[in-house]
Amino acid sequence: MRSARTESFAGRITHLQPEGAYAVLAKAQQLEAQGRDIIHMEIGQPDFDTYPHITLAGIRAISNGQTRYNPPGGLPVLREALAKDAGARRGITVDAEQVVVAPGAKPLLVLPLMAVLEPGDEVLYPDPGFPTYEAAIRLVGANPVALPLVEETGYDLDLAAFDARVSDRTRLIILNSPGNPTGGILSRTTLEHIAAVACERDCWVLSDEIYMRLVYDEDVLSIAALSGMGNRTIIVDGFSKTYAMTGWRLGFGVMPTALADKMSLLLTHSVGCTATFTQLAGLAAVTGPQDDVETVRTEFRARRDLIVRGLNEIDGVHCPTPRGAFYAFPNVASFGRPVQELAAYLLDVAGVATLPGTSFGENGEGYLRLSYANSRANIEQAVERMGNALASLAPAG
Ligand SMILES: Cc1ncc(COP(=O)(O)O)c(C=O)c1O
Image (tube, rainbow, N blue to C red; front, side):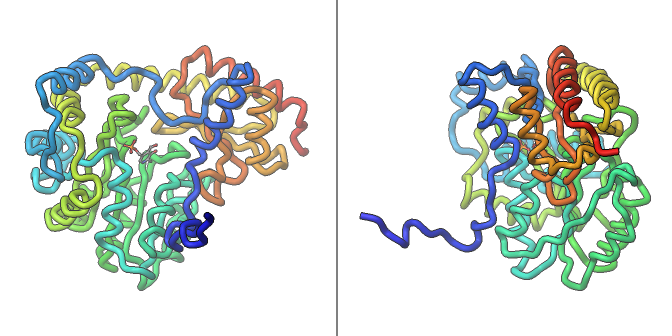
């Protein structure tokens, strides 16, 4: 028997959409099942296996019986190690009580919002930006206010646009530097401006720094290191990108102790805790040698240069050099088609899976996102195939 009640869902989830990367991956896999050869440039995860000493630490932990519940906020030994490491990398002092461990960075993009926002509060977030920001803001009943990131400013924030969007209702500002999908890095001037506004208006800042170690020509400044920001910043970071651990599910946050305590309660009543053996693998990652991270960073830089050069050689495509993360964000507006259509065309005709910039917000129109966490051979082939397919769509003008 059909039931109307079990076929309708709560208003708070009606806005939820699949993440673009998963939707395109599913379509690409369908084509592969039909025998098509697809190059995957859509998924944002390192193509390397987790570094061996980390994997072995995880295996050892499982075989030693480290498979039981542990404290919701994370193993004390990992919180201690992260406090030292995350603090040193940002030039700040962090206590273990300020560190919260979670199954991935993602829960730390949602749960802190439950803790600090009331329905109707406004939250500024980057557009184009990681889609979970807007989803999480809406999920808790707050109002999302998009902060446009534009190519002309190298994807730094336009401070006049920022000021125009701040209001008495602004309660939280979400930042992501280096950014997905743009590869942009927020400048010191921008961060100082945002910090001054946050202090003056008594707002929280959630700074998603998951790509902090994947920068190619410079260091990244954390807004948490600026004066007055220690007691209003929620740093979100994780192991997925830095240590090629996407499937292990391990992330962490650094925040004022009072909020960290609330986070432990939210974790208690949602996930319970993060797998013990995953955390012990993470401990090996943080305390062990960092050579693999450096080797991979060097490889990503070479791939970045390869893809940017190749894309810029295609008529009608303009690709600025991303400064961090592992995404190219070429401007393809000259083809005069919605990027959703262009991405579908490239998948069908060229067998190259890319993401339309609009998967990251309205301001992504005119852009595609390509993850260069893929082999150099695949990058070269993807660019060649795209060049051939785009040649038959003459750019306007
Ligand atoms: C900007 C950003 N933040 C957070 C995440 C989520 O990371 P995790 O796998 O640790 O949940 C991602 C993953 O793609 C990301 O790009």
